[in-house]
Image 1 (cartoon, rainbow, N blue to C red):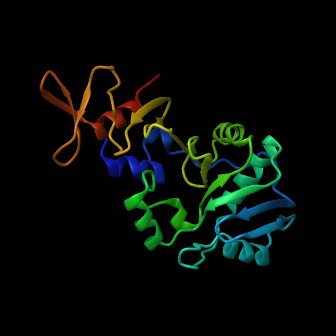
Image 2 (cartoon, rainbow, N blue to C red):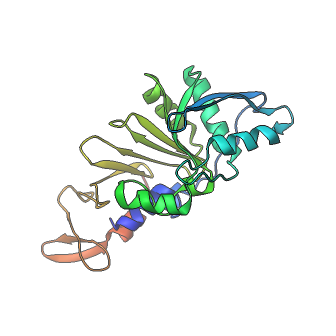
Length: 241
């Protein structure tokens, strides 16, 4: 897989046909929503309601924008209330009362620096738009990840080795990065395995290999190049199951 394509899929800036789902409306009204959060980088905490019967509370949303700022640059952005609703709903689903926010808003400059040193940081990340949170909390984290994915409300990345999950209010998509530097991107109902460079490890038939070179990796069988990985992914996503 072209690394840019892979990271664009994670970021939600490129969406395959089967992944192009709108974030569904919550089944029940989101009223009187509360959050209890801490930021280990700044030592700051937030606790209180951010939404009441009339909707998001403007002054509290301003407070959360500051709390969830890019602490590297000390800059903030308006935080999408949908990602806060997503987090709150997931926490309620697993009975979690507090969460640690490892990363929220990132300036383009911060995101660029991280993308050069940290695998899995997309160049056009949802973090840059105030629509993403990297979250850690106790022994219910894996249950929370499963609950979040079942809700089909946005992007959910699972980093079990680092004990955190990514949540965003972008298109519905899931990926996992495990402790051996390998990962899985869910494309429709199929799982695509990739390495730390974002290259697909093996084709769908179990025999294909990826040759990296030129403009994009090609799938090779019997010494002859066939469809590109981008084309194969699109076929995979649109195939009838």
